[in-house]
Image (tube, rainbow, N blue to C red):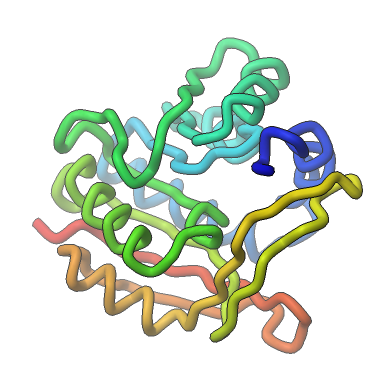
Length: 202
């Protein structure tokens, strides 16, 4: 079972995430500054219910969302009418080469095995214009498990991967990105998060 079964519950859980986690708000503000210098639009890859896509648009950044889950896209369109949301895969995005000025992928890579993450990063480089920023957010660690109980108590069956920032940074470099910074949020918590800031090489 996928995120289709938990789309509404997940949307309720993340609705106020930016207000509750100031470091994430700050990271998004840095991303917005970079995009304003490079120009839009921004692709929100693995957008889920669309709250980040909507926030970027509220800040004046032309943004659209892509997600593999049709139900998530339905929720995003319902909650954020007038914005562009598409069903699609981040390992095979149907976007033209060099068509976006920025790309963000928050918690979009955590259910993908290593080889699929590396494929996704290659496509991220392909669709970004030279110099365009990319920001990744993912679980920090060294392990994996299968998530069987989802948001709102609904059953799920999806793998979850935690990775060290330096590992993903290396994959970004191999894909043709220049890594600018990375940090770990809430390092003492049960689920620390890693943020990576990079830019497509010219």
